[in-house]
Image 1 (cartoon, helix red, strand yellow):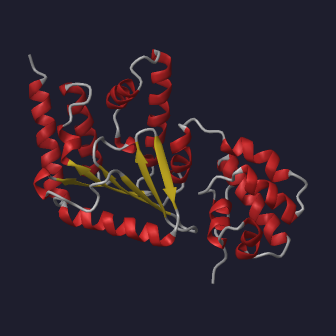
Image 2 (image 1 turned 90 degrees about the vertical axis):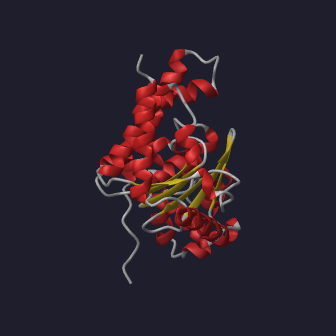
Image 3 (image 1 turned 135 degrees about the horizontal axis):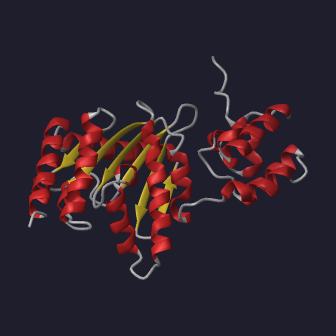
Length: 279
C-alpha cells in the first residue's frame, strides 16, 4: 500500500503542527491508534490532526508532549495554530474546507459562502450585525470572499450544492443584489466549476428539514460533516453519524430538480429580479 500523502507544512500553522506530529509519532515508533489510546481518541482522530483537518486543542497537545517527550513543543505551538480570521464556531470547518477534495452542501436559507458575490455577502453580514461599524462588516466580507478563491482551481475541490428554493426567493440586499448573486452562481455552473441543484417548495417534506448541512471529503483523512445553526456550529467525525448525514444529502439531491432544470430556474429568477430593479 502507498504511504500517507506528504504534508505541506508551509500551507498553514496547523499543517505545520500536523506534519511535526506525524514526524514525531513515527520517530517514536507509534501507530496512530497507539498514540490515540492515552489521549482517549481514535487513530483516525490522530490522522485528522496530522492531516490538518482537525485543530489541536491544548489538552491534547499537553498529553502528546508527554507521550512523545517533545518538551512542550505542541503545547507551545497549538495556540498559534488555532488563530483564525473566522468566527470561533466556524473556524475549524473553514480550515477543513480549504483542504477538502470534495464538498457537498445543502443550503436552506442563504447562498453558501463559497458562492456568494460581494454585495450579497455584505447584505448578509449587515443583517447579522446591524450596529457594527463599516470596517467590521468590510473585514467579514473580505474573509468570506477570500474563501471563494478555493474555486480558482478548475477542478478541486468538487463542489456540489443543493439550494432550497427559499434561497432564490429570499430577497437579500434588494433586487439588483439578488440578480447579481444568482447570475454569479449560474455562471459557475455554466463553466462546469460547480454542480448546483434546487430543491423546489413543491418537494414538500425532505430528509434535511432540520437545517443546513455540509459534507467534506479528504484525500487521506476521514470525511467530516458540519452542521450550523444561529451563532454556533458542530463538526462531526463519528463515522456512523457522517454516514447518516451523507444519506440525508443523497436523499435531498434525489428529490431536487436536475442540474439543467435548476440552472434554468436560477437564471429565470435572476431575470425576474433584474426586471424588478428597473425603474
